[in-house]
Image (cartoon, rainbow, N blue to C red; front, side, top):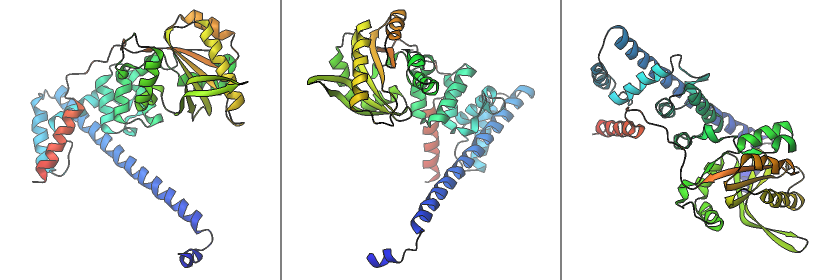
Length: 347
């Protein structure tokens, strides 16, 4: 081993690392290129079907005939089932320029696009979710969950004092990071649950909790102990936010918001900044999660606080309406069809 290591020329390690990066980048570009070609082809097929049905009076049964003919001509290529061809037509109808708003649709995988065009009627909402998906690299499961939970109505909706307590760039990002309300219906708790019950359930479901908090949150600890002048204090939940580069203190209240809650959280933020925060960390942010709040009371309370704090509601039982699905076959049904085609071709 020593002899082999001694024969490695100077600069080899850095060159190897650079090669690995370039190879990974090339593979990613190749995969993106394949996806772009597929999405463009699907859009073109959908446009052709739509135009022929509209201009030449072709009926809906032509899709079944086309699916059969394409399967006979290209038995090794999956994705030309009747159901998927209907999605292609729907894609061309809802995205006439191959765009989702201003976003090129071919930035996204096919079934992400299907989710956007079938679960959202509003073009602006589709564009917003497309932008967020590209920016954060959401999986299809995550995209579907955020659509179901109406994230566009909740993001940046919390009451905060960030504009007065943080620099502009960090204030905008911090405000976008918080939402209102937070949905904890995955905990299986009723509205009468106590703070400790909610806290324990959130830790048991930490993956879903982090997904609901949003991208960038890293869990640090629960009932995090602070020693201030010999007295002990315990933070409900402590996180670190990677993009904001700061600690985030989360306090749970199973009651309506009260101004004194902000004072308590302000004290915790001061202690974390003094005892835990590194010199290159940004100021610690507080998030107060309450059962309900009076927005004006919360705004008045935060105006007198010198640390950055946000106040938001949480819901243990879903109150937000869920989006309506179309009558088109579900994504799961399409994937089942593709799997059956794959299995039959292997017989």
